[in-house]
Length: 237
Image 1 (cartoon, rainbow, N blue to C red):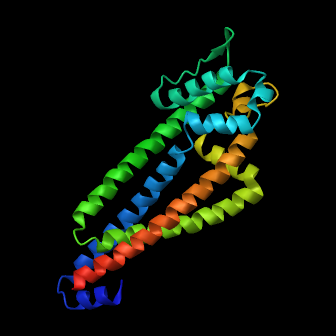
Image 2 (cartoon, one colour):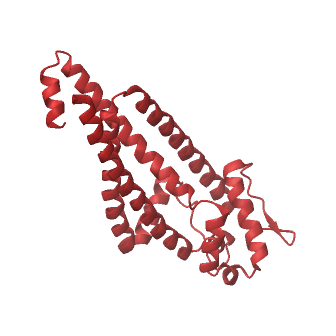
Image 3 (tube, one colour):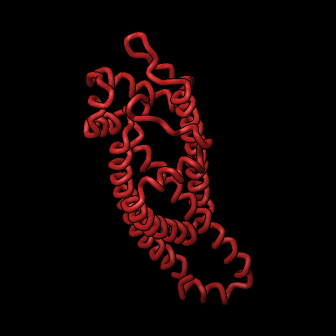
């Protein structure tokens, strides 16, 4: 709390309750803002435009032996199906299936994870708006957003450094957390899934995603801190 908030709390007989409520609002706003920023940053890259660009950089045509039009058609279909279903991932090229049963099953698992995360982000957005409405003075709200975004910025730097040094380890841990053991191991010599999305694709996407998320968190922290100070001045005026 700021000095002004402490002084206001001392003179207010309802201070303990109001302080607890303010801390709860700050915590809710902070966590929700972090989830919303994560969702927004990921959405910038999990779309056909970025995927097509990065596949070009990753020489997917050499991995698959397909022309650019075929790669784009298959990839666009996969990305759309992740969001809209049906989740069978039965894409075909020249009359033959693109994915094996194991690959299609993994993509179905990916779809479930993406949709679950999307629901969490939407819920966080609703909660963030609700916190804004409830906190009429906006002191607790902006304090929470300022701290949440600051923590996120520090976390991105830490995680980014870890990824730069131990990307394979981080990739493996991520998959172990969200997917069943043995369901995500494929051979780039034969399996289309890792040919369409090779390691270079994920490495470069992770780097750019981290940079964008860091910029987003830092900018949000600066704005939120300015708004927090302004809200405190209005509250004690």
